[in-house]
Length: 128
Image (tube, rainbow, N blue to C red):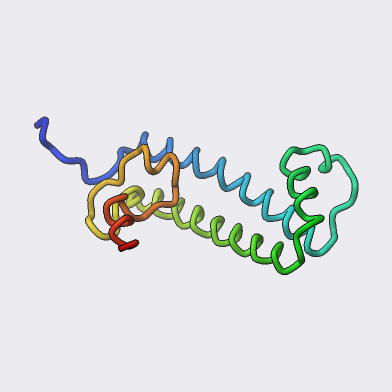
C-alpha cells in the first residue's frame, strides 16, 4: 500500500489549508480596503495610521497616482476572489488537485500559493 497515490487531501489537511486561506483572506481584504480608501480619500488620521500595512501604503500612496492605486486595488480584489474560490474547493473536497493532471499539488506549493489550481510542472509549461 506504500505506492498508493492519494487522490485528495484529508479533511484534517483541508482544515489546515482553510486556516491558511482564511488568514490570507483577512489580510487581503484589509489591504484592499486600505487601497480603496487611498483612492477615495476616505481614510482619516485615526489609529489605522499606526498599522505597518497602512504606513507602507500611506508612504507609497504619496507617489502613486490614483490610476496606479486603482490597478493595485483591482489586483488585490482578484486575489481575494481566488482565495474565496479556493475555500469553495475546500468545501467540495477538490482543493489541491491540479486541474490539468488531476494529481495532488504538493503541500509546499499550496502553503506558498494557497489559491493554486495547477501543479508547478503544468504552470512552468504554460510559460513556454
